Length: 423
View 1 (cartoon, rainbow, N blue to C red):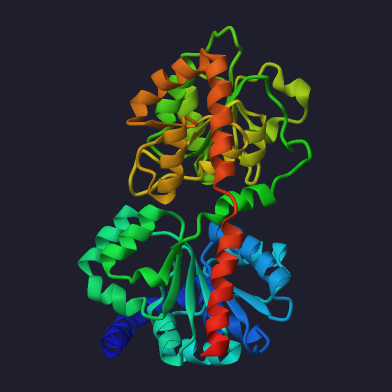
View 2 (view 1 turned 30 degrees about the vertical axis):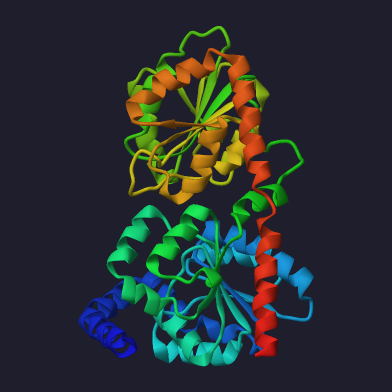
């Protein structure tokens, strides 16, 4: 199967080479990106017996950062290196971590083999769902143990892998330990043919990451009112339902105010238009300078990166987007929950499946079937301050009960290293 896979890759490269060469000539950003993916790993000093952590993008890097700091404390004599897939993940890692950071090269044997020789890792730790065939197969041939940390296996991925079960087992043969986020995801691995001895439920390190990254200082955004609803990480198709929900509260005795934060900042003009079409007066976050500016404000549109969590800290209720469309799979409902906000979200939470289930079961989360159901659900909640407080407390308690996953991952890493030294 190794030979067949690389024949397919070689054929694809040959077919795509005219496109790649043309784009390299015309697009400097693409050319720079490709060069980084081919050569940047040469900047990493040669290692012996290091712990190599790989995380794809910003979300995974945040989890990896927490684990890496714990590894550096537990194994001070071992070097730790981190690879990322995206430039944003790399930038975050370089800003937050004291370890070598590089972009993972293209998954081609002539790049992967010398990279493994340079790093000589005692263990490769993949964060969440990063399966690169040539990397994993090269580790298998060199008997380098691999661990999947914070392992994620959504229902959609499970359905795909079930159709390709022999390929999945071939792909993951090098993985000695699947440290899964939940029992549901571990059960899916069992159905794919992974032996129970190769897996454990270690929990979700994102719960620990939130506590570790908690900011005791005051929020870095203005407090626009005592009673605020934060609509975070909204997606196309959701803002019209949000606008309709807000419009119902033009006049309300509790003086509710609203924050709308699109998932992608380039959509701000579009989202502002949707809100204004519903008769709402909108103020952009970038226009707010001090508390005096906030008095007349009813709706704030977040047009600045990095402030959503601060707005959650000023809020009473949160809606997190991305859950009405299965292709998005929902966004981070854990952050507002830990802050004691009841969280509303759509039913398609494949990226946060276990978290959504736990919050719904405790009462801290409120799943919503369709966008048009948002307004009545919000109206019921906002007219009952005691219910808001009760559900918010349940949300925070739910998150706090799930913490401790980092230590469980460290135990798994220690066991793999112990097996390596006695092999």
